[in-house]
Amino acid sequence: MKSQYSGLQSQYSNLQSQYSTCQSQLMNLQNQYNNLQGQYQSYQAQLQQCAPTTLTLQVQAVGLTGVGSGSIAMLTFLISNPSSSGIGINGFTLGSLSCVFSSPVQVPAGTQGGQLKIALIISNGAFSEVSAFISSGIVMPSGITASCSGAQAAQVGIQYSGYIITVSGQTYPFTVTASS
Image (cartoon, rainbow, N blue to C red; front, side):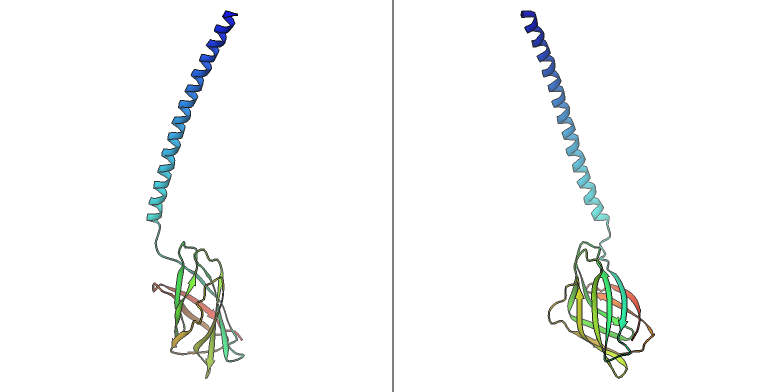
C-alpha cells in the first residue's frame, strides 16, 4: 500500500511538473502572440501612412438622352467612391457649358455605382442651364441649384466631353454621346 502511495505521489509530481512546463510554454506563446499582434498593428499603421491620400472617384457617363425630342435632356452618370472618405462634387462641364452646384453633391465612402442624373434645359438648340438633379445612392442636398455659364449646341449623335469637378478641385473626365 505504501509503495502504491509513493508511486502515485511520484506520478502526481511528474504530472505537476509537466503542467508547469505546459503553462510556461503557453505564457511564452501568449507573449509571442501579443508581440506579433503589436507588430501587425504597427505595420498596418505604416501601410496607411504610405497609402496614397488622393481621393479617387470612378466616373462613367452612361447617357445623354432626350436631346432631339424636347426641351430637357438627361445626363446620367454612374459614380463609385472606393475610398474611405466621402467626396463632394462641386460641378461639371459639358463641352463649353460649365456649371457649379449651389451645394456639393456628396458621394459617400464605399459607394458603388451610385447614379447621378442631371436635367439640362435646351434653349435655342443649346444646353444652357441645369433644371434638376436626381440621384440614387448619392446624397443630394435639398434645394440644390446650379449656376451655369456658357452654352453648348445640343445635337443628336455628337460625342461630348466634359469633367466632373470635386470640392478639392480634382477633375474626372468623361465622354458621352447625345441621343434622342
